[in-house]
Structures are given as structure tokens and as C-alpha cells.
Length: 216
Image (cartoon, rainbow, N blue to C red):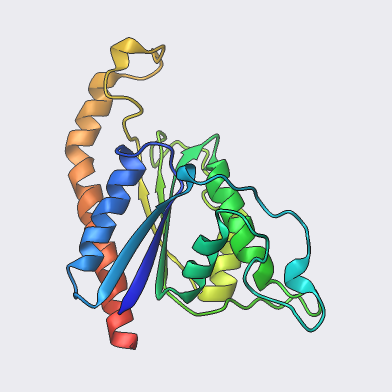
């Protein structure tokens, strides 16, 4: 059995990011019964970012998996054994959520050797980066996964990226102080693009599963 780990870095259980990730899971599962897809919601876990304990770099005991013990530890260990990795986050203030950033600190810092600055993950696997944002393709301030994308590309290879632009922020704009946005324009854009975004998500999940099956 091959496993794809989906890490949901968004706070909402049923909104844009979660919907995209659910469809990716469906696409992956549609390929083969030999593909297990597991989704972890980071907002359900009580954890911190890198504690700089340096336990992953002790001489003769160095590890490329974080050694700090908390509720995130088993997720990092399970991710290290996976065959594919999907990371999903809404974009807040131009970046992924704090929960996703701290997850990536814990994931990637053990990969880095301070002997020669090489990077090595426990296992090679395809990676898909998912972003959902209020900004449009033409006007947004997103840094996406930032320097962590560089770490992923250097260690695991160039990730596939999937971005959903101009997403709904709320279901009823009349209830909130959001006068800068036209609900009508948002709705029109969603009607024209959201199903396409979901189809691309399904296809991306399917591609990852097919790649895993072919490699193994």
C-alpha cells in the first residue's frame, strides 16, 4: 500500500482550501485501491515551530526527522515514510498560514546539514503545493511557500503548484465589513472558475497517484 499525506494548513474545515484538498484526495484515490490518502488538519493539533533544540544534529545521532516530542511528531514521522506529499494553505498577508509555516520548519530543518549545507530528506516523493487566495492572478501579494518552497525543490525536486485565485472569503458578504469587494463580481468569477479549479485539483491528485504507481 502506497500513501499520500495531505497537510491542510487552513483553519476552515469546509471552505476553499479544504475543498481543494478533498478533491485532490478523490483524484488520488480514483487511480488505485493501492493508494491510501490521509489528510491531517494542522489546526486540530497543538504544536510549535522549530524549538532550536538541535536534537536532530547531535553527533553520531543526527536525524533528518524532527526529534522534538509533541502532537506534531507522529505526523512528521508518517510524512517521512509517505510516497507523496500535498501541502495546502490559504494565503494570509501574502504568506501561508502560521500553522503551515511552523509545520514546514519542523519538516525541513532536520534535512539541513550544518557540516556542508547539504539537504537530504528521509525519502524522495512528489510534492504538490496548493494555495487559495482572495487576490487575483493579476493583483496579489502572495509569497506562497517562500523559502520553504526552495528547500522542498532542493531536497525533493520541483513541486507542482496549484493556485485558486479570487476565492470567496465568506458566504454572505452583507454580514461583514467587506465593502472593498463586490460580491457580485466575486460570485461571477467563482461561477466561471471554481469548478475548473476543482477539476485541476482532481487531475493533480490523479497525476501524483499515477506517478507513485509507475515508480513503484
